[in-house]
Length: 160
Picture (cartoon, rainbow, N blue to C red):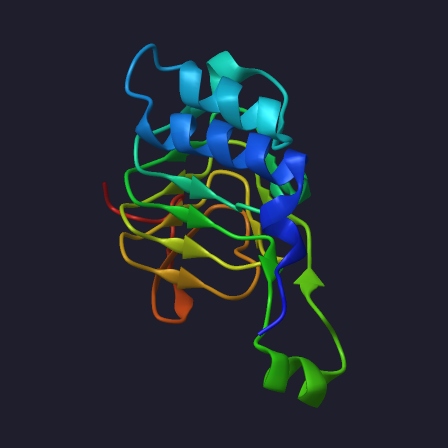
């Protein structure tokens, strides 16, 4: 097995250390968004985003993740922007890695242990149910759930 170039890069080590601190950050509440912004995650205003402890935002390419204002990421959420396949898969698909921009739009809520896959856009004021695996774009105002996540409602029509 050949040596992985990511684990010897100084920038990877810095991103990893800041990511670890963000993962464990409990207080003050702006600390996790701030640490993730320092890692490269595109966050406009760290005081207008909530990222709970135990959230993982892409370890190698956090700069391909955008989190807009008023977003709420609950415990255990995973936000990905890349896929690094095994060597046999690399040969089959002809690519070393796949990196795509992932966007979580203004006012979105992502439930406990949900996974947002690379290249997905989570719509404005949408809700991703706990445990969902989001593999395609989520429309604005949608409620999505399941694996793979499907639209199960609209926040404007739901009987709250």
